[in-house]
Length: 409
Ligand SMILES: [Zn+2]
Image 1 (cartoon, helix red, strand yellow):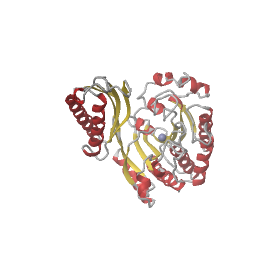
Image 2: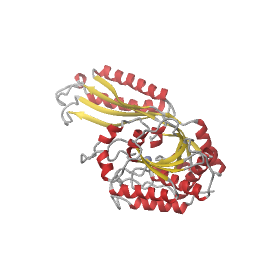
Image 3: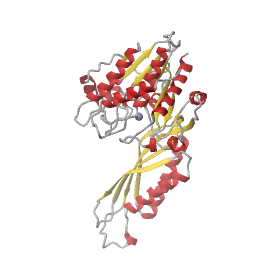
Image 4: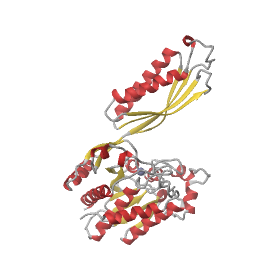
């Protein structure tokens, strides 16, 4: 049994024909009319194979292929169909259409299975409209308060709930997912990095998903005249900041673990005038590791080094944590199952870590999750150049098919 590549291509082409920015990548903001055309296409395709459709909490689609035992927990698979602004044609779509195609193959072949198989679509994964990433999956799994999501506003002041209702979505089941509802959630996603592409591999089996901490750093020195203040008498906040940024790279690259990454992506200098010594610098550090202890180690070491740099320069330093997401460990039996399924198809799967978060991660507190990565050409994603070869998508979907059958039977 295998998936049908031409149907996957047709699904992708159809969904991506619903696009707010033709010629400038793919833009499909949650609950926009383009989004709803894609949303309704998925529902129609699921209905064609006899799936029972329920619109769940936060507007999630749940299309169920019943098994022989309705009391069993479901095997779930799916992803998202919303995109970033001017994004690519594969992020989210690959996981959605692969799950749909797997369901078609199971139904067509009249495969007997005991567990229900649920095909799901989670709105607002990217946070491009309402500014909460993985919004619906968080709300469905109960880690985000529904009220908070429903009141979240887009740039025009339209709330999530208003947008959902005016798009014609009627939620039929507001209850959150709880432990025992779902036996496993499997998601295919494009890798959004270079590892598989560089090694010429089709399949990555994710073993862990990096946790992240965002830290705000405020360095305060003294704004003085750039001409009149001798070098020895300065309290230049930016000079302290650049040394801390340098230390961030050194520590993340060399001192912690193989999967440690650290980024300073935001810096604001005050007063920000060419002839005034910077008196204050605000920075945000994004720190990630798949190992919770390493993430802690990174924060501690960086804090110590930053304090030392500021102490020597007579600068004040404040560090506060903006948010923290713990790493997710994929259960070994699921990673091993996906790995075996790929090997049995003659593929060379690669065990790997995910540096990015996906909807499945948000379901981890209520079910076991497994993730399959397929290559992104040159690692590009969230841009019009985002590309994944169809045969790689087929490889991923075949592995998903085998794994779902092993879990559902
Ligand atoms: Zn995605």
